[in-house]
Length: 128
Image (spheres, helix red, strand yellow):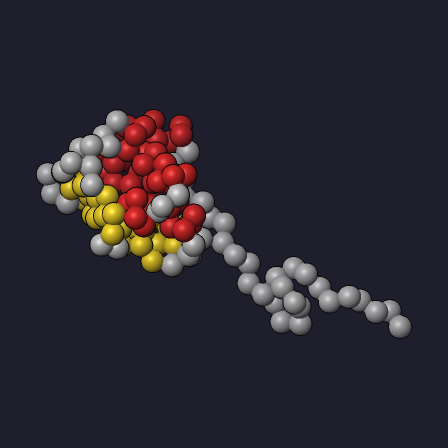
């Protein structure tokens, strides 16, 4: 099997992954998964598609993560892993789609407008 290269995005986080056959090692920016995401919830989010399909110990994943916060990075990585699994085995798409991992979350931060303190907040209006 050759290396599968996919991309996942969430908010301003971008995850580029290289998935190959191996023992289940996940390396993120040259660090181990448990070291990069010390929070168990974020580790669970990252491993969800692998555990759902049942191939958590069959592939090694090398990840380049950039931008955003840790939650956005974890969800971007989940999307990238999902896309890689669908590329390897197209039949796994139905399981992953039902779990809601295939859809990219389009929500982004709204920009701040001039003359306002924040994106939607306005300064107090004075009639007189």
